[in-house]
Image (cartoon, rainbow, N blue to C red; front, side):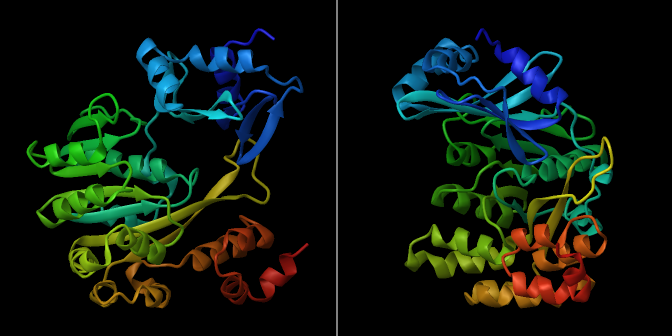
Length: 364
């Protein structure tokens, strides 16, 4: 085979795919509407896989990946799209995964995000977290929120990402976007510097380590609006993940800080539509929404995160909803099948109760 990476990426975009997997000993795979499918049957040799992957890397990146065996970066094809790139070793051979990043910044209204999400783009300070597993649309939601801010507020927005996914023009706001590995050595280094760079709004692309989380919480406490993402599947799970990073003796302090600075958690997943119309995007978003009320702030401060779910259940008047309430709504509106809802639910019995007889009727 004589494959060119640009041709493969162009085909991926034309087919409406989101990801491409390159691996020695297997054909190339595309992810289309959430489902993996092979492109052709002929497996790549180790040499072919390496040639495709290394064709996207500059000399410094090749040296880095050969030394560290892993690399996070981005790759752009002029006139087509930018792609998030992860290179790694698998069974002694080079492999890669790429995700297509739309050059068109997602529009808040076109995404159909709830009004309560809009409200948190208007806040002057505090922390807003968008969470979910890989491929759940976190980046898209976050970009839509920043775009709304860019069109409605005159603010200095500083982003720290790995890699930069959407490039924002300066409309009403002034954007400075920094990429880990190119513009800064780490998220924590960038955040330390950020507080001396006069930002109004800070986006932290990944909140994984203690220092980054502590700095982000501190920034939210000191008058900045901070957006961040985590790979967690629920609002309560997000609180637990943030706390678990800290040693036990520090947890009471961080709970107290979070109870005062955290504004909301939007935990989301993408679900397969039951019968999408021709040309329509094949997946819908289900979103758990937690607004930090005084009652929820008390639960966070007292370490009673297990009770957060029931507080979300009863907070619908404030714009809150559990993941099961979101999924049940999609099932009842015939957007997704009952089985799809159950497969995405962490509490299937609760979803079954919410759907009721209608869910039973939809079972196949």
